[in-house]
Amino acid sequence: MKIDAGSETCLHNLLYSLYGNYKKSIFEPLSANEMTHSYIQTHQDRFLAELFDLLRIPSVSADSKHKPDVRKAAEYVIQKLKDAGADKVELCETKGHPIVYGEKMIDPSKPTVLVYGHYDVQPADPLNLWDSPAFEPVVKDGKIYARGSCDDKGQMYMHIKAFEAMMKLNQLSCNVKFMIEGEEEVGSDNLGTFVKENKAKLKADVILISDTSLISLDTPSITVGLRGLSYMEVEVTGPNRDLHSGVYGGAVANPINVLSEMIASMHDKNGRITIPGFYDKVAELTAEERKALNKAPFNLDEYKKELAIDDVKGEVGYTTLERTGTRPTLDVNGIWGGYTGEGAKTVLPSKASAKISMRLVPNQNSTEITDLFTKHFQSIAPKSVKVKVTAHHGGEPAVTPTNSKAFHAASSAFEEVWGKAPIPTRDGGSIPIVSLFKKELGLDTVLMGFGLDSDAIHSPNEHYGIKNFLIGIETIVAFYKHYSK
Image (cartoon, rainbow, N blue to C red; front, side):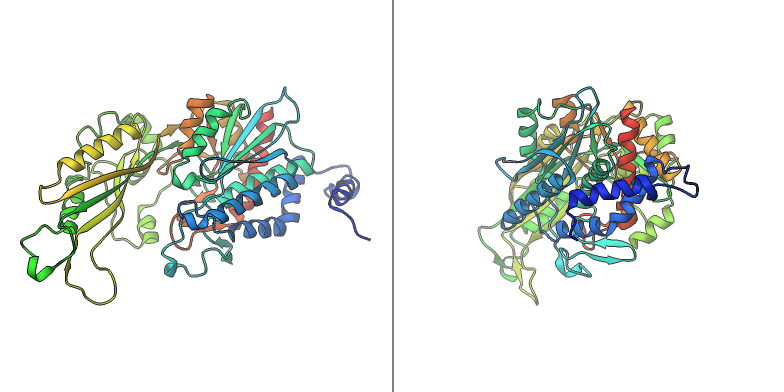
């Protein structure tokens, strides 16, 4: 006899109520938490198979040749939201990649949670450094290896499966809206327009995002601060063509040499950025805040061992935790010019280029920093070269409150599922939409991330723990329960 999905769910719930939802004593029914845990365990193979199908789609938003793949990923998310029980699921077109929207409104008097995530991923390059194909998920040592497994397909998909579990078990206690975009990795420019034009559609009480990390599986944490971003590209041009380095070397400026010198000058011997005005608006932490931040478990020797480095480096006077979470930075993300092929070619290049990102902290503004960088870079260029500065994308830093109802609900969810309270932490990464949500919708965000810093996001061999994925689903369900109280 063939049983359709709906009948199977009814039968499943009936068996739960008659037999399966009982502990050792038939008079002691399973709690809602135990039902959730059982549902996740029962369906975990399907959950993972669905995630693997999503991970196989190379939805690289930065590469135009993957535009059809980005749309395919959006369509996949739409179908899974419908399967889970969402209403009004739609593909919202933008000038770039589409946004997926869906909702389930159970009662206007109940609080509404707006879930944000993204289905686009970073480029997988360099492909030769992957131990397995970037878009063919492989499980090793309990971890899923694939581009996007942690950032953010794996974490975003937890919310869809948590929603499914609540729907199937009749446990959904809040209204829920989903907004899943395809441009997070390229700056979310069109999402900003979408938010401004759809404030009524997006009306909610809190934003819930899983796109950050935990301290460890033994020490849960909730991110309460994110750095902003200013992403630049620079080009230095010398002669009007590549030259023979023997004939012209020593007489004509080499753009690679000049660019290297310009970049090197942007930090002083103490690791501080030398752009005039760069630190003028930086919000300095109090002694008490620094002390609290450094209470988070951190082993410097293990940190260096995991990265295979002999020592750390950064702004003098600050700990590693402070440098990565509360201090602004300037880093070269890529640099190129001249001949880089096999063998030798004695060339003095015409051009040299670099991509440079600056992570920003509270009170810094990405537009202002972009302007400061542009003026400074142009001012330090010698007359022997011409420079071109291009701003790509940026975002504002954000700090979320720890005294809100939503934060307490998230903390209680971790305590319930993990058996210990989470530690508030500052994350070094950027999620530009968080500050936009606050500005346009007036809503604070709860950042319930379940990745680990060692998951190699944006790098070859990105991975995400299966345990993180499954316990993340369970913790998200617990959040809704506590938030609805």
